[in-house]
Image (cartoon, rainbow, N blue to C red; front, side):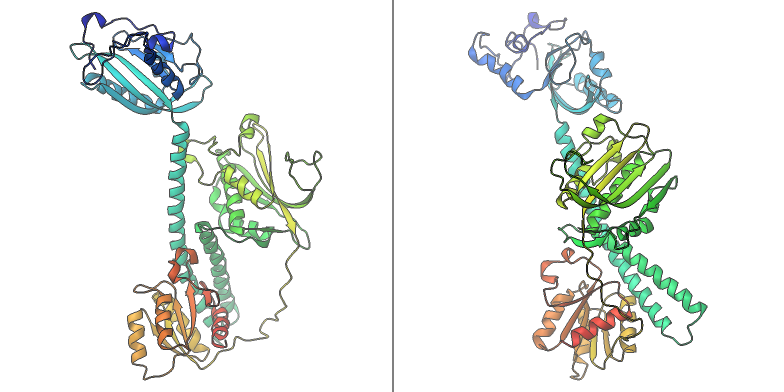
Amino acid sequence: MRLENEDQTTETPIQSPSLEQFVVGRPQEILHENKTSVSEPASSPSTGYFAFAARATNDAIRDWNVKTGELCWPQGLTSLLGYGASADNQISFWQKNLHPADRSRVSALISEALAGAGDHWSGEYRFRRADGTDINILERALILRDNDGSATRLIGSMMDVTARKQLQDQLCRSQRMEAFGQLAAGVAHDFNNFLTTILGYGDLLLHERQIKGTLAEHVTEIRAAAGRASALTQQLLAFSRRGPMEAVVVEVNSIITNLERSLLPLIGENISVVCHLHHEKGGAHIKADPGQITQIILNLAVNARDAMPQGGQLTLETSIVELPTHPQCPIDCNDCVPGHYVAISVSDTGTGMSEEVKTHLFEPFFTTKADDRRSGLGLATCYGIVHQSGGHLRVQSEEGKGSTISVYLPRVPAPPAPPYKKPGAKKARGGTETILVLEDDVSVRHISVRMLRALGYQVIEAANSTDARQLLAENGGRKVDLLLTDMVMPQISGRRFADALRAKHPNIKVLFISGYLEESLQPSDRCEPGMFFLPKPFDAEQLALKVREALDV
């Protein structure tokens, strides 16, 4: 914008101790974009609306005299930024409080705008408040120019957009976590196929008569390793699950043991992991979602790792405690129900936390980490999961002495013990029925066929629905008793193929297999109640039992 009259151009900063003087006292200086003057007198009631509107935004307004470098603050220096009226009135005050990472970028953009012919500039940057905290600022500025087009003043409205920025960051992290969850589900599916092959051939080797002694022990170790890897894939699938999961009764030590074996070694080589597990004879059982409890422990462990940049010790401990009534209860919570709880404690030898940090620890968006190290699953989420399970959290920490965060979950009775099954007492029963195996993964298809033929079944194998239809047509009218099909197939899904086949052959039985989570499939491709399903990875015994169960219905 231009200052039309020579006598309105000023070379000294506008001293604006109040917003009314800034907005109302000089209505004729600022012109509309159509170059017509603001002709309303200062006494007009409508001019006061500018001041009221500016105050309603709670923005800070800065008025920078580009010629002299002087800076005044008609509004917000104290209310938004926390500085007193005695703050430096030079542009250097604004520049030095810019975040160091934003300073050169923002200065270059403003210099470019001032050197150009435009009347407006806007940009985002971080600005340090008087209390030392940084807030995200969106500034929209008006550039006033003289008759030569040179910039004389920059009047900017500084809006605090920290909350909006945090929501955007939270959304981006959520999208990254969702993408990672989808990747984890895909990786887990492929691993389940590999593990099915390993387990299957391991079983076939162990049933060979010449495989005994040391060789049999080696095969058994391979099979045991595949079983542990299977537990890891289940954790990946649990992590990728988007829907709510059903709480089950689980022994807490089993969660820690699986986590210690598979995920905790990823914490870092300079951090030692120590586990002190309870020795209760009857176990310590909780009713919760094992996947969510795993995520909570992992999140607490990652926070502990970040508190020990130079290394240290991470301690996981489980115990059974009895919480008394308030106020004797060590947990600062009025709704704590007295009784027996299972405690999971995560301790570190790191930097510890101040009382101020502990006060805000479970608030959404609160973090002491840099932007690039924020966790996707915050402590606020941990807090919500624990309380949904009827539990509580306790934080113990001192600066320089490390931290301990304890999760208390109500103890529940142990589930009934499964009936004793004598090893080798009941061998998996086979049969002579005809089975069509529809599986696109060649390794899984081959091992499934071999295991079924070893059980005495007649087997037809196909890699896709086209091959399966052709084989059925060439079967000479021979009856197919069971369709064993993967849920996810390249041409049409296993569910759609099974529905089409049963429309022609109503008596055929169907057994679905898959390494994917059911909710990752299209609704029309999922199993319905009463359908038979065998999750991957599976071994020879599991396959034999499930096939016989489906055939005998």
